[in-house]
Length: 116
Image (cartoon, rainbow, N blue to C red; front, side, top):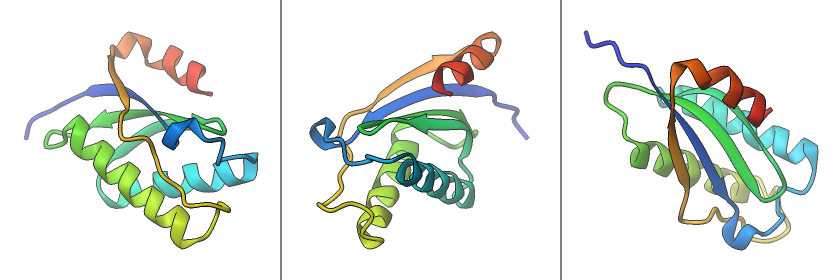
């Protein structure tokens, strides 16, 4: 069985950077849901946090996972869930684009601290 350790720091924003995640409690709910859903799908989220208009996430990719597929699963399912739960007053959408950069193992703690 292959051993893979590839950390990726992801950042993505709400559609048009709209400040829809406007309370700490709402953000806590959304980040927890993203973590729970990712775990069900075999995606290892090391750390997650964000602000009213964007999310930072440190993920350790699995051997069969791609950046594109992980983002598709996380963003698609979480926006569906936010709308289904009616957590925002208007339709919730994530921006199509995202930022992803690899993180060396020696920098993982610094990235966690940055995301915190």
